[in-house]
Length: 98
Image (cartoon, rainbow, N blue to C red; front, top):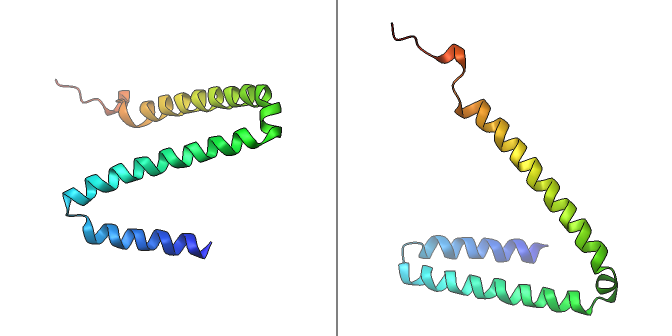
């Protein structure tokens, strides 16, 4: 765990030191995306090698769909009430213009 914290802290320090160099920022963006692609590829390999996951992929797919639908509905409901609470005028807030 300490390795993760040290690595992240070192990255933050280096990022702070080079934040004004646009060329390095563009290179960093591309390297970050390639690193994400490599990690996703390796994750796919690990999933493909795991017989338990492969044998139960139909069940996992249904669970994932249900979790996704639940998260989406929960987000929509929260967004609706947040909008009503913070971004709509209440009748008592209106100023009569007479």
